[in-house]
Length: 146
Image (cartoon, rainbow, N blue to C red; front, side, top):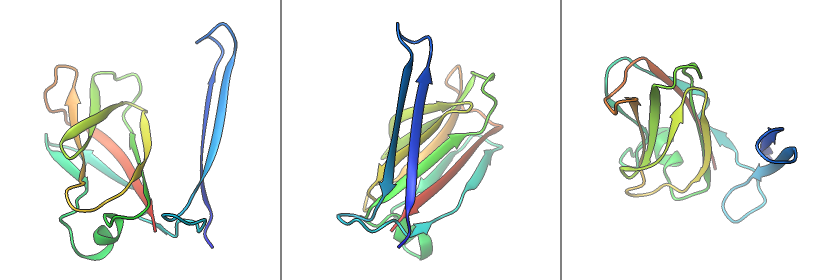
């Protein structure tokens, strides 16, 4: 049985009156079981050299790995903006079904559960501070799934 764990640790010495330290680990399992997720797309990178939308997960794809990842099963999505943290002018907007769920600025990442199926697409669009399409932004992504 595959065992995949995701761990997050948040530390800060100056966000509150006291030191903050939170850590949590989750074992990634298939839907409704204690069996570990057995598949991984691997880490891929996409560099935006032109202003365009990038579909990360598309329920309309019906063949190969895309059909497995977008099935209505247990999956976890990882996305990271690989741009330099110091460049706060560019961000990647993460959207599900055309609704923006968040923005990843340089160095930011997201890890969220995913249940695919009809009409549940995940896409990324890059922007600059003025809201115009941005180029020269690189995102890294991968999907753990059953």
